[in-house]
Amino acid sequence: MKNTFKFLKQLDSNNNREWFNANKSLYEQSHQEMIDFADALIGEMNSHDTIETPSGKRSLFRIYRDVRFGKDKTPYKTNWGGRMKRATAALRGGYYYQVEPGNSFVMGGFFGPNAQDLLHIRKQIGLDPDPLREILDSSRFMEFFGEMRGSQLKTAPKGFEKDHPDIDFLRYKQFMLKHSFSDKQVLANDFVKTVSDSFREMRPFFNYMSDILTSDLNGRSLI
Image 1 (cartoon, rainbow, N blue to C red):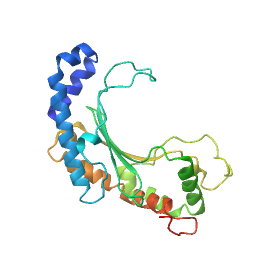
Image 2: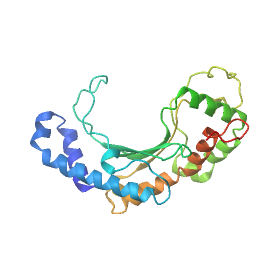
Image 3: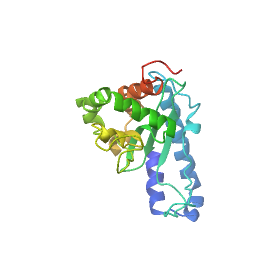
């Protein structure tokens, strides 16, 4: 990741088209380094999961920022990010990785469940929250992820009581996990495996969510 860190640090101080065009070779070196990383990561992930994303290049997000809607009008992102999709309807949840000096991390989970899936998740949790609480309260989960993340409603969702005993879960609109890395970890030769192992730590959570999303409220398979 040395070429990538060099490029991103300089880009952070020179986030304009003139500098970028004059230093296109730095971008190209970093871009190829990230493609190679993502290709290796997909290969490593497929040793313990089933990834649908066909290549590292398809996994990566573009470095160019969409300035139409955000307040930040700088033309380039100062990080590389990418995602991987799990294959088949039985394997739910998505993976995201980000490489940025001082702000590298992985995230995984359910970033934007549609209304039907979100309601189904809430009903399943409301029916039996214990399996999810057991996962989130485990010492390994707490050590690695700390807590479940995601945007939440300020009050109870429609159809659920405000004093529901599991309202702390039912308010969630997203269900995500995050684990951060030091720059030293990112620059190490085994960073691909470090990222893959971090995604593997999400598996109990993914297995639970996949199970409830593919079963009706009586436990019968929906797929």
